[in-house]
Length: 116
Image (cartoon, rainbow, N blue to C red; front, top):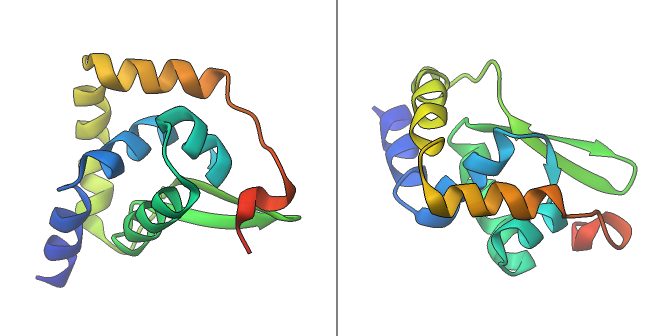
């Protein structure tokens, strides 16, 4: 039951859906998420943490960078099962298409994008 609750809460926020959308494109650091969605560092980090806790994301450190990607083998089977459905839905949304376009122009800035 807890798996379903975490996934439901994670998907109940527009910012988190937008983050999932860009992470379907490629692995990103916090500053790339910030640029693509035009949000603050604290908002990006907080929402990335919620998605990671729900089983949608994995994080890995590369030097000073914390990089986030979609989890391919989550302990949360519900999150794993929903990812392909979300990808299909996201492909036809104008707002999400704009986020993907901004992601193409985003760059990693500063040491670790403020992530410590």
